[in-house]
Image: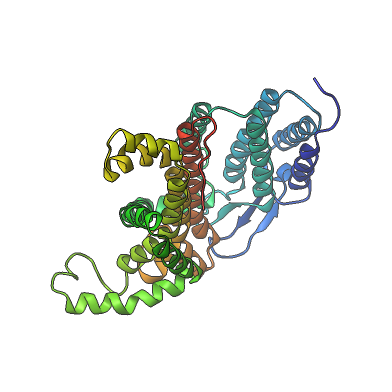
Length: 388
């Protein structure tokens, strides 16, 4: 085993020490809107718990600095992450004034920096382990189960974000479903349109340049501007086309958000389809022609299977992009997790903002890990999944 300092660990250890000693671990507020008073980790926890946990984080920081086996570093990092989350729940319970239903305890900047630095350390170790796709998916499943168990146990029920959730549980899951529908539904429609368009663009070079340039222009339009541009034509369709309003088409709401997400999704789909088809070995097509296959048979039996990794890469790009952009749909009545983000901004209630933002980040993170693993599964040795 090599000895010496771990260069990336030095930075992470410094962040852990700053978050532990120089920044507030929690913020106690008189209500959900007003500014509160920060408390350090030692102040936030009762009796000697704060001192013991501070010492544990110092030891974890030192372990990240020295060169240890990667499994040991990962175990230490995960243990520190779990300790930080459990400490937040304990600090929130201890920080709430007895009998005060309006007081709130929010995670402080020290907790967020600690969570970020430990998560970064865990990701760094996992990257160095070069885990197989199945192992990454198993690790994700274990982490998801652990996080779900923590929330289900009620340990974090006293923190302000969970109190916001308790007051809006039904609305939360309704908007979560709508957010997923916007992201997944627009991706599916984009593939139904973009896949055949990509095949045509691969076959006809003149059309390829025109189509890709047009889709590139669409990508440069800011999302909120595109939502606004779609209000007028969709409003006209709802007013003048029989049955359009009955199926949900209107100038504001889900329809313009859905159409905008489809338009933004077309460029990655078309570009990756063209790139994947261009990478199909000429020998494979020649052999298929020699076997008497028609163009359609070659496309379905030879070209699409070889293009599959590139299409999975397009799915990854589109899904992560749409999960983030669907948040903006709330501005035009499209629903989704952006409802809580913009309500929180309007009320100056940052905990409500977090109620919408944190699940969105989590969805993007999970989608990235799962689709990265699927791309690795589908990529044969010597074949790379190209993305545009």
